[in-house]
Image (cartoon, rainbow, N blue to C red; front, side):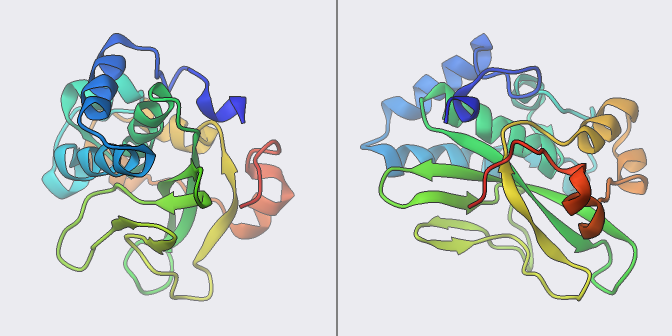
Length: 205
């Protein structure tokens, strides 16, 4: 479980800004579930989704997401993981493969989180930000994610990762404009994932 509490390059939970915000959220909480919900709702509602709001800069590192107040789903998941880890709650990253236009190819990865709750074990939650047609909530043990799996090539990619996928980091680090990220969103086919594109050290839910 220590991997899911660790500070790292992109989930930089020991950064001063992350620590300060994590303390603020913890100070108002009444227990673990309330703390996790406060962290989740802060990232979901207070950090604006880059494409929804057409906001630059493109962010990746959790502390940069917090500082600029914006990020793609992947970056927002890095921030949520960092805030939870800073509060001693194990958190990891999950991915879905979804249709970009809800109608077959092309496909892209969607980033979300898993948190280990003492009362329920691993639980997925999605802080990408609600909008028309998207209503993600924290209500364990029931998952209420942003996007359902619909088409035959869409799927929940298995496992919980301690660190972001290299393919995700590569896109967020390469492109400096949200429109370029949108035009080059990362994708990993299920067969490639099972062949080792995911983290071989991830854990099963």
